[in-house]
Every structure is written in C-alpha cells, then in structure tokens.
Length: 86
Image 1 (cartoon, rainbow, N blue to C red):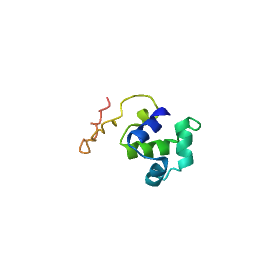
Image 2 (cartoon, rainbow, N blue to C red):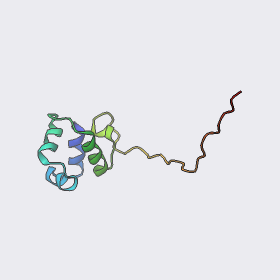
Image 3 (cartoon, rainbow, N blue to C red):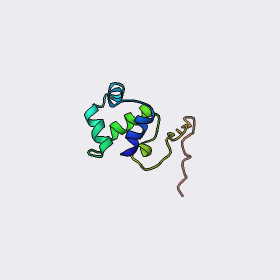
Image 4 (cartoon, one colour):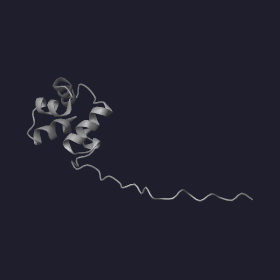
C-alpha cells in the first residue's frame, strides 16, 4: 500500500493527524502503510474521502491521484414503456 503512505506524506500529515480526522487508529494506519494488513472497504472509503482521491489510487491500482468524476443521475427519467403482448 505504498500510495496510502505516499498521499499522507505528500499532504504533510502524521499518522496521528489522520487518526484524529478519520477515526482510523494510528496502529491500523501503520499496518496498512507497511502492507501488513489490507484495509477494509469501509476504511478505504473513509481515506479516499479524506484525501479526496480514488480507492484505486489507495490500493496502488493507478497513479492518478484525482478521484473519479461522479455521474449525475437523471431522476426525472420516465419508466420504460410497457411492451404489448400479442
């Protein structure tokens, strides 16, 4: 999990600062950064929101730090038309 540590260091945060802001314990963060423990999906989402990045970046699947664009959902879209049976 090199990117979990990389983004923390790039933001000039200590593990304690991240713990205080996210609620993820410093010991767990340390294990993530050393590759001793895989982050839970919940903690990945918390860290991605905190750092404003993507889960893929945190999991070392991409070098792109920017988060994915969120799609707008068209809530006014009508239901599909019913098909007639013959």
